[in-house]
Length: 276
Image: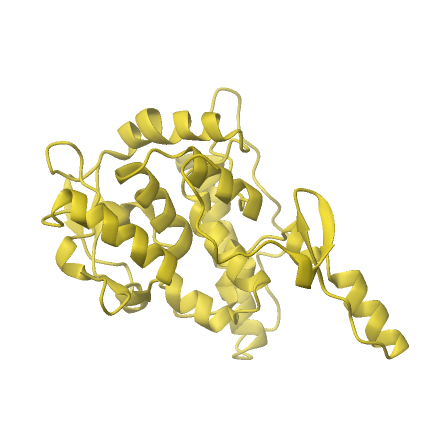
């Protein structure tokens, strides 16, 4: 395909997944197509020497490891906001303090930082302009961070108060943090996929998750962003068995690879400490 000749395998695969999802939606939901003509196209392989960013969803254990290994303040809040809002890194780097309403527990996404063009740009679609609710845990983290910084200007700007360079963030912050946390070598954008995956595993509808991510069509959530997590798969066998035998399912979660009854699972509302 001409697309692969002009871009990396990673980018081509993202575009292909999105196009497949759109055609699938047109076929199944709109009845506008008889078949998905892109279904026959498989995943593009990276060529030798081509930089490839591994992208997937972090597990709950990995998210906690990242937060526990992150430095207090800027680094910890930045990673937490990516993981618990589903924002794109470019949107986060463009986030101004005036767009964050901590009392109301929400923030407004109205723009993104285009580092190549060295300018702020608007979302590509109307759905990209959105209000993202904040969890009470994240509100507490951001409130403490604001108290230490004053909260004026860019929320996560660089030392000079300017938009963060994504390459510098990757080199100086993300790679060292990932190494300290001992998690899989995924890129920071994977935190957006993590948000979608955890949302779906937690029982949130694809519709609500898609709106939080800034997408108009919910089908793209499961087609592109959501990944299977051990905690989500843990109850599948129980649910199927219980339904077949007319029993009440015994829901379980997986913590560190060990199955535990749901009622004995660790309190997920407790705050993750900087030391773990």
